[in-house]
Image (cartoon, rainbow, N blue to C red; front, side, top):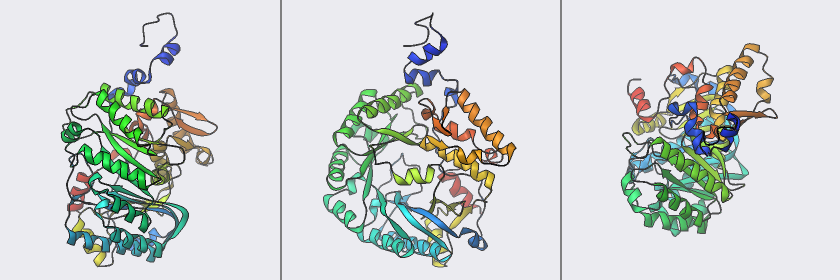
Length: 450
């Protein structure tokens, strides 16, 4: 019920009986609710020099993110580093990726890996032989945990029975596909390069061949009504996947549904999926929700966002990593990336400084994405001013209904889950708040001038 229908009840009671979407829309923060994508922190860029290599030694590596910036066709809605490919540049790129992995091991980076994640771009543009070449290089450099998760993002058009069989043979044990919708009109409106036929066929093949599989669905698309969204979610549920990522469409000049309709779509998905035994366990951004069945959370997401964050290598042109307590940003230009490695140099654009206080901020900025942060390490800080600063920030979020503290754990509330980027911003340091959080186009511009 909406506020005002029961004038004799207390404000607290009114708040409790309002449905979640109404509570979100009525919240004072609604005017600043924007879907960003804070995927790295600190925000400032520090030009890398090769004499910094000694600062990158580590024995705590837990995973690799491998960026494949090639696509056979370009989708309008993808914001990541990418371009159309041909066979020759792809082959050269694979060799460079292997060289980068090998170079990190030679400078003293070691670890027992729990995840390898191929993202893009379109990683499924790689042949099984090329994937095997990369995975063999990783095996030669690092130890694998027995339950390592090796995950690949795949375009619906690339997913055939033959390809799925070959992926499993080379060691891939998790697959995810950006089907985006099961509706031809919606796919056409967003500029997707596949049709609903491929969304259905890819989904069936993935479920037939992989125990651990999932898809992405987009909402707030041009021409998309709530009933379209309901149908897409029901189609997803029919395949009994273990994982679903839902993303709000963030195209420039996107003239789709209003913010209120977006919130109604997001809360409907949450309610429906919860009823089907899925748990919302992480949010890449405001408007981005990751759901899984018990035991199928994506390790890449929980490890590199969850508090405390694991160290992982960002491999490939435009990749981000976190190693030796430093954030790495790779060159985005593919030619520069390849040339750098041909000369035996790490292809880094930026390497953050390692500051203990900034690392503490990072723990919270990214940690809220997995909806829970252990506060016990914070309470052991000897610096009273730093401790007080963080406790004040937490109290601010508590007073706005965004978080609660239970048994020394910071937990994001039902409302807070819809303001993840705004929660992250509360934990930026005074220094970092001066810098914009740059994304692909801005990073490319920075690269050109440095």
